[in-house]
Image 1 (cartoon, rainbow, N blue to C red):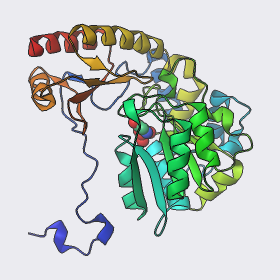
Image 2: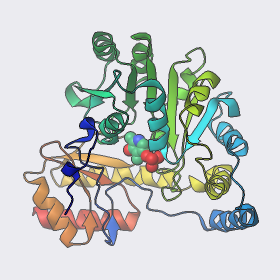
Image 3: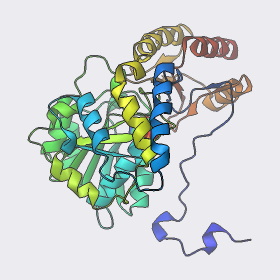
Image 4: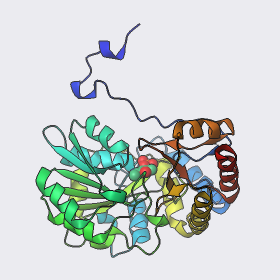
Amino acid sequence: MTDLQDLPLRDSLRGQTPYGAPQLDVPIALNVNENTHGVHPEVQKQILAALSDELSGLNRYPDREFRPLREALADYLGDGLSADNIWAANGSNEVLQHILQAFAGPGRSVLSFGPTYSMYPLLAAGTDSEYIEIPREEGFLLSPEFVAAKIAQHKPDVVLLCGPNNPTGTTLSREAIIAAYDAFDGVLVIDEAYHEFETDLPSATTLLNGRPRLAVSRTTSKAFAFAGVRLGYLAADPAFIDALRLVRLPYHLSALTQAAALTAVRNAPLMLEAVAEIRAQRALVVAELQSLGLRPWQSGANFLLIDGFDNPSAVFDALLDRGILVRKVAIPGHLRLTIGTAAENKAVLAALRDILK
Ligand SMILES: *Cc1c(COP(=O)(O)O)cnc(C)c1O
């Protein structure tokens, strides 16, 4: 039997493991930060009609520039942005891949501050870019001075800053973003996958004006409850968007994806209806976890990084025995928990109370 090691694989991919968050059929899946509330029934109906309208034209390639979708995304973001400022792809993972294909690559480097999103090193490896991970400061924080000093020291080609940060939930300050931008000549990407769950923090899109090397990445996979469709997007200077056109595959967004996403984005208020409830649930879950003697970190996202487990792996297994899937992380004593519906959260807290007693 042929083994992977027998194939003429690129050296930089040898020994790597693919992204592999477990996909298990369990009653309560709270491991990949999906919105567990589901798509609003009214929007479901409209999406079905929009998809149906596309069917007779599926013999043709889709609109390569997906202009109506970019207009809708620009309207949703506001901040004076227009379709020329917008890019989209199959998940923000593909958006990030386009950025690294255009601005990183062999002989170039990508820098981030860990612990952070586990896809960053994989995207770097896939584009043959060097990945530099700098440990965050105490409490997973990033001060402007620290960020600027590390970037100036390493002079990377691309910096990825995740805010709120996965897996810690830590929010990212405007001062840190500005300091990062001013510290080097490369591309700065703010990954705002969880922005809609933050309260009161303006998006980094408000910093785009006059900063052509800044890009703000978003996704419909989390707050929008649309992970199954695969639609991520980005806002940046129009010249930045032109760079991404050089590396995207032609027609990368299918006509069905465009139709479904356009309908969803035009119905943003309905799609985002559960966000306020998830935020309220987050506060309740924090209080309950604390009453169990656990230490959830401050979070601006729809998940909590929880400290205080003597044996996180055993707790993970005991939860799974009860049909609850959470996330193991590479941080000792911690687990990560997505905030679910009220009923799901109640079940998790009851299970934890039982397991930890
Ligand atoms: C979930 C997540 C994404 C979203 O990826 P998609 O490809 O859009 O589903 C992006 N960045 C971070 C940090 C995430 O946690």
